[in-house]
Length: 249
Length: 249
Image 1 (spheres, rainbow over the protein chains, first blue to last red):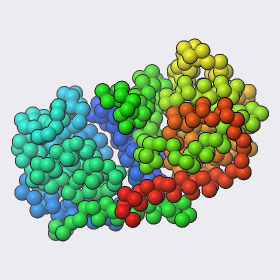
Image 2 (cartoon, helix red, strand yellow):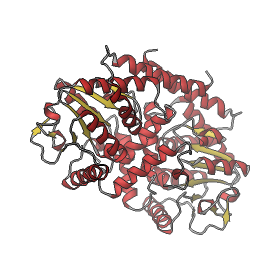
Image 3 (cartoon, rainbow over the protein chains, first blue to last red):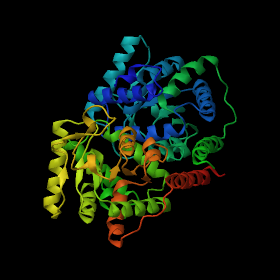
Image 4 (cartoon, rainbow over the protein chains, first blue to last red):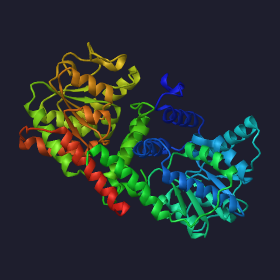
């Protein structure tokens, strides 16, 4: 981290902190080669949001919290970037929900899986968090997906009814929806296939979402009649209005 | 590159090709740690343009070509990502203009400078391109910048009157403008400080810009009365309208 990033009053503190967390994760072998490019795309969209949780994102976060609380078998799916950016916070969310997390990565190698599982175990021990961490020995497959990324636990993702999948790719989101699950996603691009396929789409930066969930879950929010397309339109309108103000329209 | 990327008819062929070029450059030690994140940001903004040269970008490219042709001492400044994404094409542009290029990078190390200079020399030899490549032995400094990134050649950037600086950071763009130079930039984010500071801002993907310049320069375009703020507004309006159409407004 640069000298400025250590100062929480710096306007870009959190953005620089997230970059620092990614660099650390990369040095531990937790990330695929595409992770940095994916993060850069996220940075660009977050810039258009003003690097803040906009109202429609907060609504979606409350809805996601309500659905996770109401679920019979909720689970949080974690990939490399999610562990890097908000591993500790997402374990705290899982603890609040008394649900497991499952590591499930697109480019699955034994080395990366071990690095991610070890990192999560370290966080658990250091912060005295009691959460089951799945992913090491998948015994099921997500129908409709090819290759190792379909692997999952029957006691985890395969039989979950509500699944929080931060930073998911479109194919996997679609396959999970096709299984009849409620799929809650975090995606900074409101136009992505993931954002358009999901049951509830939170267009926000993951570490902010995790901190918001930690605040919201204890308040016991209730499920609403949710119109995800309307929330995406609202998000797009927010971005359009921001850009239009720059464009002097 | 994945199997699809080898097929030029694939809709995302060029985007995947650029990612492949960056990965190759990284493996050769040409890039700083932040290069991939910066590229990801570019990918996100390019997505909002439909991964194409929009009319305002073509106008800006013609204006840049005209100003480079009319310059007394034009130069092209190259950083790691510029060399990786369009090194060959930018050397061809320099050859058409009979001007030098100068390697000038933010995080300057002897190893990265050597990797970049060697890569450019290889391209020159392989494609029989006759262009002077500066950067190895800087003997001047850009006023107002601190550290190694201020280093430059007196026979290159320091005394140039018109400078094409693809993918430049805001500080350096500002310092070059303060020296009284015409600064022509390529930046996919129309809201960036670089985009707002420059004399002419081309909001487009660098390899497309380089190919366009190779087409345009031989036609001998003329300098116009240029309103860079108007072109940025036009670009923003394009993006706003694209997003508004998605938002159903």
